[in-house]
Image 1 (spheres, rainbow, N blue to C red):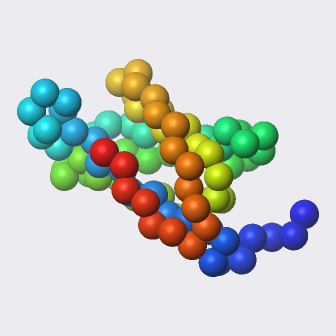
Image 2: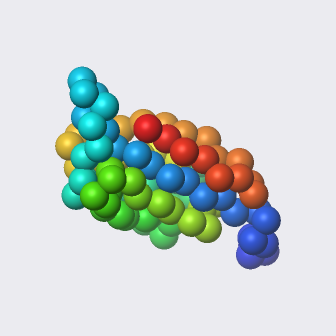
Length: 88
């Protein structure tokens, strides 16, 4: 397959907060994996939230992704090409 051009990529910033108080949660493990049929082990990304509860991922393939936190929560998102997206 043809490699994706830079404008065909997306960025995602995740802000992890304590649900009840909306306080930032640092040091939370975050895993992203594509859910569109691409081998998730080839495209999987990992990160950890910083002191402000944020973690940023760049150069992601557009399409559906699963966000999984090490605290057990998961969420589905759909990323658009050449877009910056933020999830809380």
